[in-house]
Length: 339
Image 1: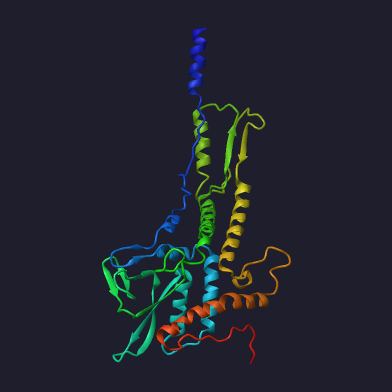
Image 2 (image 1 turned 45 degrees about the horizontal axis):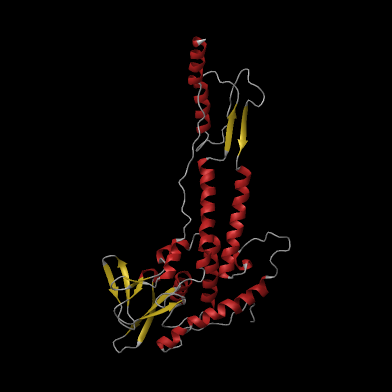
């Protein structure tokens, strides 16, 4: 009896156990940006630090095609309606507007001759400009951590989007949609890695047939692992003599669900971004998902110009009050050529 028990224990010890594994690390969902709502901007000693990372805003600009496209639409229409001035070219005005729409802070440097008359208006990259904390109406351009260029007082004009928590820097009005833009980007990157790595299976291989030895199990395990990466569309062959029906089953986990979730995430985040920018989808090349489409583009463009572009033009025209010259002027926005 003891010999039988020992033989049974030996057979059980030689049988392979169940192997399970996980991948990926837990991701924190804590929104650390909200902590800045309890503070004003930080004084770094010589200048104030922005309440929102300008480097992060610049990186997020291309996180989603709808996010960047909405900003480019506004910039392009404003630039097309802008009347160039000897002090401010169309190219410089476009750069100035892009900084304002992305960073909510744009800076215009006035260059004067020896008599003090303005001869040129040049935009300074808002990503690197900071407002001085010790001197009134003075700004610094940070080339690097060890190189600073200080503008003279009154040499720089700052255009900013007002904020509820402080009055030093502007904060983008699309800030509430950044989480959707990031989610849209992460969904695209995940889908790209999904196909690149060949991890399309998302399944459990369930084997109930008796396997003769560990060599067969290791060979099957290696064949499954080799199906990832290059050559992941190869067929898998398994020979199990004497096996029963459904002795080897492949149970899909999330292939269809992941596909559906991908499209849902892309559509929902797109709608959030468009709502934040208030740009009609017809102007951004978005394909309608309904039979009726989005309707005529002309009325949508006219309402967009009236509600969004004209207020932007009025805000940008404040440069004229600062410089004392009517530098910023616009043609009336027209969709049809009246000539």
